[in-house]
Figure 1 (cartoon, rainbow, N blue to C red):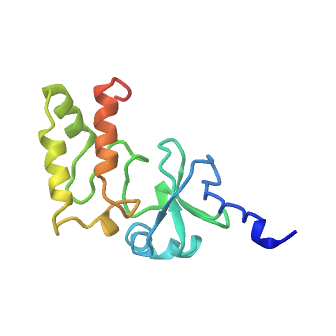
Figure 2 (figure 1 turned 90 degrees about the horizontal axis):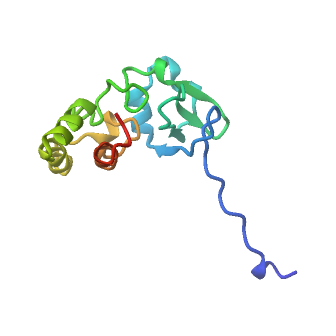
Length: 149
């Protein structure tokens, strides 16, 4: 058969070796900021974040090596519900719950605006290396819909 007509297999999605949740690729800069130096060799420079709250794994690589959330330099959302949703500016789940209880979006809106500023340091502060805006908004709407506490 002519190889021009053979479909290449899709790249496999990186999944957490403990819970099977699809991982979020993180930049090396984030790994360096979140993982203590003595544990950095536990995962490859190309690694992923497992955002399933009840899984102990924080970062893993394609070789099924991992670093647990308890080994990180500090607590991260959603592994620790007391950790800030937005590590750059300190927005917590309690802040989002307050917005919902007050029937407004003052705190959430402020984070969305601040995330666009040069003050945002997502690569060093966020466990995914990305902006927290999507996670904050998702949590807000879960609360509005009665889906989270």
